[in-house]
Image 1 (tube, rainbow, N blue to C red):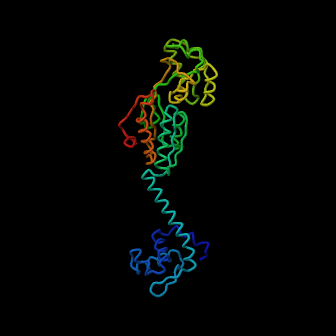
Image 2 (cartoon, rainbow, N blue to C red):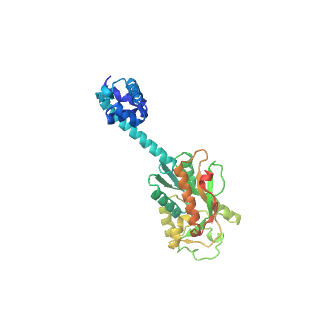
Length: 331
């Protein structure tokens, strides 16, 4: 048998046989290796003979008293045996780490309505306590993220829904929050109290391109007051460009307060004093019911749940949901 063919047979061997082979190499004889393996010399010799039969080569030259000398085939097998056993050990460690939520990977979709500071806090703590977990974070509107969730690109979404839908996704609500209408501080309506829809009727509105339902909510609010809906919309998913437009023009934008908390605190923008248009969103965790979440994902989801309820008093716009329920119980 040619040496080039030798490694091709290695995957058919049992790891137990390879461990016994390396022990004989290490001890230098069947007699010395057998007690270390908890075997009789006869049983160990039979095992090595079986390995040689499967490989079709002689690995050891036997001497008196069970002494062994490696053949060229035996020498060649050492490197491959160590490689295979090391790979098996690594696989076992990764599986155990995955089982115990100490390893593996988690891909999270972060929706626009979720408090970003809470996510950052949860991810920071998760990485500090379980640095082996590979975490991927993808931001976007929940409607787009749900498509990626359905395709298996992400494990779960921390985002929001306006109402129950037929997308067959499971939801674990954490809080509810209502959208606000924002504008630049220099906007003509910025200082008005108890704004009416009639006052906002002729301004240009911005709306998410990926979520046309927001524009529909705005239009419906006007129609309910027997007013023509706004005629001018700018559609954009570009957050930075959208903010630049909002700060330089008298545009209006209905959005989740979670997106603009920092800008509101810094008074870069203002929330207009109006009760409509708005929409209440149930903010929480969204995941597929037909796919079992891996342990690391469940742990991170529950960390996020814990962080939300830990900091809920700091989220002035949020009303808590499911404060005593663990995500793992639902998932």
